[in-house]
Image 1 (cartoon, rainbow, N blue to C red):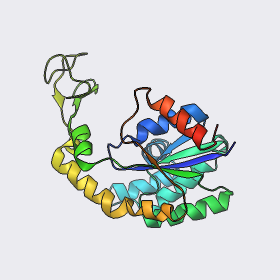
Image 2 (cartoon, rainbow, N blue to C red):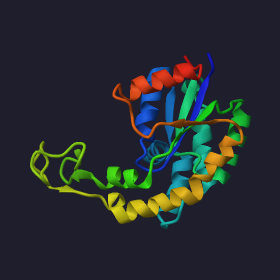
Image 3 (tube, rainbow, N blue to C red):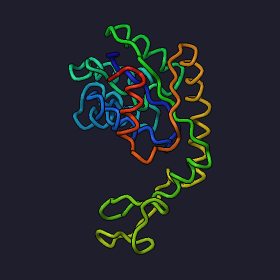
Length: 221
């Protein structure tokens, strides 16, 4: 069996998270998501978390080096030795080069890069349909998971709203950022023969079954 050290690539709303969780379940490996890393380090007031906060408090972007250090620290933990799924890192060629150095330092390498190539109009449809309850934070979707009463939470009767990040004009801007900074990673990893393209839609069997089938094809199980 090959060891599974996987990178998940795809635009916001492409379904990376769903597949990452399913893959971790199938292979019993850990998901390393940058959002989770930041929340952990900030909540626990670690040295890296406090350092990141100094930039965030000034409204500045956290330098790539700090994010890379968080990733290195997480990948060095015992539970990551069986394999991992990177979700949200790298997001640029610069970060990919940092990841190369991290993996070299800890004696690991990437097994495959899973790429979800989803059309822009489908991304906008998926994200702009999201709604959330102001009171209990229950998520809904206009098309895939609508409330029984339009604009009203089924659970608590609270008002539903669309986050600014999920509005169509914002989604388009996020897609532009993805295309300019993250999509070049597809070429970067294609040259290494690591890209595995995933279908934009899940099969009727669901994410876990899809990831199990793919893992068998790739020799991870």
